[in-house]
Image 1 (cartoon, helix red, strand yellow):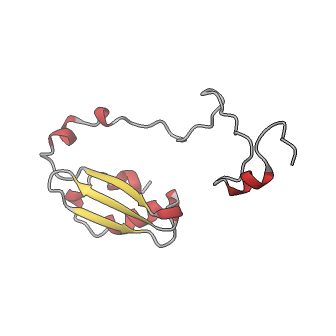
Image 2 (tube, helix red, strand yellow; image 1 turned 180 degrees about the horizontal axis):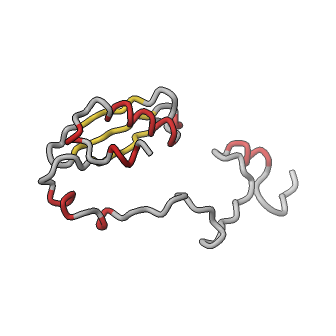
Length: 122
């Protein structure tokens, strides 16, 4: 067997996790595609009333994704009472499905607990 000029032999590269015989070139920061489409709001920029947790109605949300993106569940936690809602996502975790599932869960709550309802229904 002759020695390859670049990369690994076919036999060795088949046993690698990626199956790639040569290294993939990394892109420079200005050539990378952006990870998020909208500018993020930093947690330090939230209103003071949300920080002190005295007023109910401020919620924190998170998305928990399972192995190989096979399953997902959303969580909503009310900051002052720590009341937690789990959001079932049977159709997937795409933004449209997640928004629809959030609205279904939040629609059952009383109005004084959901101060951001007007933002989601637009």
